[in-house]
Amino acid sequence: MNVLSLGEYVELIGHFMVLSIIAIGGAITTAPEMHRYLVLERGWMSDAQFTGSIALAQAAPGPNILFVAVLGWTAAGPWGALVTMLGIMLPSTTLALAAARWGRARRDTLAVRAFTAGMAPLTVGLLFSTGWVLTEPTRTSAVALVLVVGSAALLLRTPVSPMWLIAAGAVSGALGWV
Image (spheres, rainbow, N blue to C red):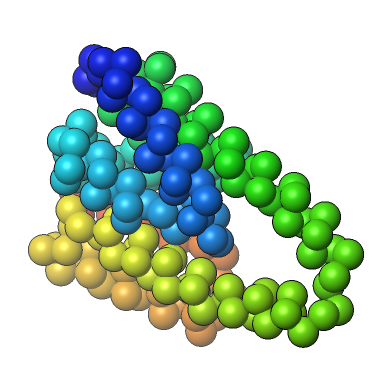
């Protein structure tokens, strides 16, 4: 955990407020930019801490957005968790409320339908980017690559629950294979 100056907290909340606005498909789609900022640019955590923070938050019950609080906590303790959560929630929540009202009133127009259809491939691309960043610490492990590719193939081709794949990953980690 780092001790940040007031200016760094202001910069942190500002960065997460910008990420909040571009988080199409959910905050997890901005994880690559969070990684660039927190790990590569600021050095407030390592690759392993970044991946571990997201894995811990995703394994815990509750909203997916909690990974942002865990990243903030890892970077700068309780104030970091508070600042990152405020930054990621406030702009997108305000925009979503306003846009939902506007879009609901115009849902049958061509422009609204085209915008909605156009967001799907963008979201898929952002999710692939997030997956790529999250595999960073284990890309040199053959077992990890088999788990990643095998899990993706099973999810695409079968109705298997993701919980079984998460369990397989946890067992592999517990046995020291990855």
